[in-house]
Length: 116
DNA sequence: GATCTGACCACCG
DNA sequence: CCGGTGGCCAGAT
Image 1 (cartoon, rainbow, N blue to C red):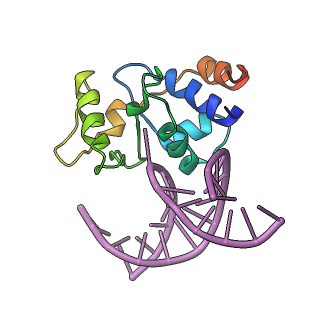
Image 2: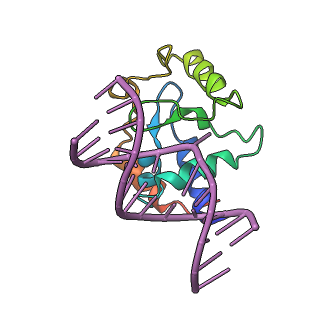
């Protein structure tokens, strides 16, 4: 697996239960600000039972943008509600209220820990 | 190396 | 609150 994807998964794994992050935010924490689009691809390439909480990653507008045709969007909404994140019927989440704001120490640790 | 593809994003009308 | 646009990026062809 590429270092990039390994870092992305590491960052997503660090998101606490009940909190969410935008694709762009994950990209920034992974050391690749601007690579938001590549985050989605990295998560879609995730094997089943990877242990990576991919459902805690949403669009910057607080919308669930996972493919509805494959029922992924529905699953994501359910998983989020299961851990206390409010999701409207149209799949909207209040980022202001549920976004994760990692401490400076955590940000530093994520940037220094080599990908695995 | 050139092209094409998205689970993106900020901006504009 | 849409809907379109141009820009950006890692991967797969």
